[in-house]
Image (cartoon, rainbow, N blue to C red; front, top):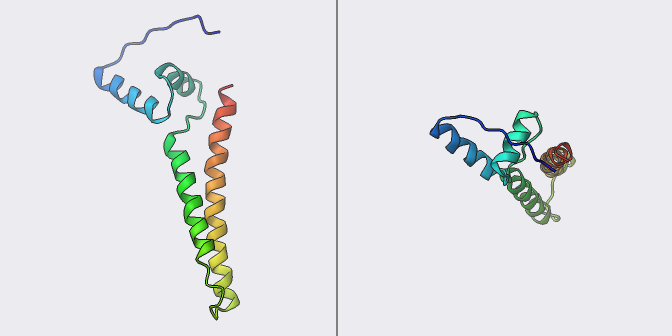
Length: 105
């Protein structure tokens, strides 16, 4: 249990920025400052939204694949490579967020 308290001095502008960043990461100011001071990852809500959007676009791409199209093998390969790349990016962002949660425990 955390019992030791510290105080810091900062400008009003700094306080506004710190609070905004903590809110963006869905953290308290204390937790945000602990994580940044201890060089732990701070995952923002934007990361989770980005993962959701990437997975949504990938699902649409998979759904819209023209099965009856007369594509060359190279065209098919490029199409599916785009789908796989979106999924890899989403998994990478998600993996970084999970790593950040492990660091804080």
